[in-house]
Image (cartoon, rainbow, N blue to C red):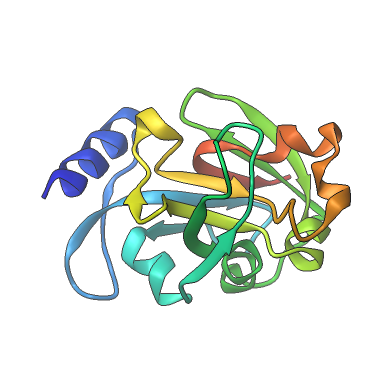
Length: 161
């Protein structure tokens, strides 16, 4: 119940609407994808989970140890959108932080849109509702500082310019 309250508050804060998920329940939209796509697409948490739940254990510059993240592969979200006529995406956070990310990152690496860390749902205070996680321990090149700006937390929108 607490998570549902948070998602409603996050939806209100971002101006997103409640959506009916594949399960028939009214849930807030946690991710919107728009721009150079056939149609703007919105995803509830249930919608994202229906794409397949994935786990990734990796260190981050912002956490201690090697947390386990749970979410959906970014490539699965992009594939669910349909035909795309762009080669990069702009990820936007609740605080309006923006990062341009090559779509090839989502295909070449196991990039996760995480909704939980170590079994705890991410909240707005701790980088939720979604956090883009790169497999930096599995791919040493991803530890380079030039990739750190792509780890967008409080992700709620993707725009394909």
